Image (cartoon, rainbow, N blue to C red; front, top):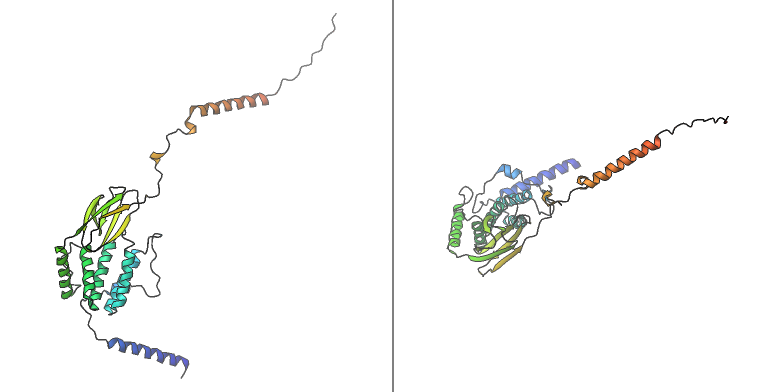
Length: 294
């Protein structure tokens, strides 16, 4: 048997073994039937495909690369690789928490914590699943229930129980101050008002971002645990100064001063006269013959 034939038979044996292993699982997908979007699945990066570069230096990973990571976690969940999916979600959440001022951050966070809840339920971690659902309620308090097209009935029922429990709890106050004062405070992606002010937080993780014109945004993460939180003081760093024409000095430029043109005029007239007299031809000498006196 030639070397080429041996390689072909070995390849066929590997493929056949993989198909037999895939067909032998026979496990139903637990708790929820996530939408299987072939288009979305085709957009998942391959293992040897480099991650999307960040658009801004030192701004952390780009939102595109984070969303790709969450898509990969969804694929792992569909493949029943729950712990691997949780690992991807943990990295995605860490990356999102350094991009709190980016667009779509909280939408991506919401999708990540809901998928975390599904993975924890599949692993039998009931309390961890409830904590993830609680985080989803905090991020989207206006949502009354989960989409029945994406989540199984038992998951939706668990979500509603967590939501009702959270609504019955009394949140604790957190006083916020900023330097400079009057900064806009965003709480979990929603505008809360201007500092100094007090906000009320349920137990769980909360995201605060302070914004003031001429200053860098200041994000803060608060893990409320039922204990008094006191006062949160934040000092915002100023942006690099930008030249403003209104701030330019009011002194007249040299060319707009009267004595400048006087000096120029005198110099021009003097130079012209010097050239005129210096270059003019001198008169020719005349011969005078003196006659003797008679």
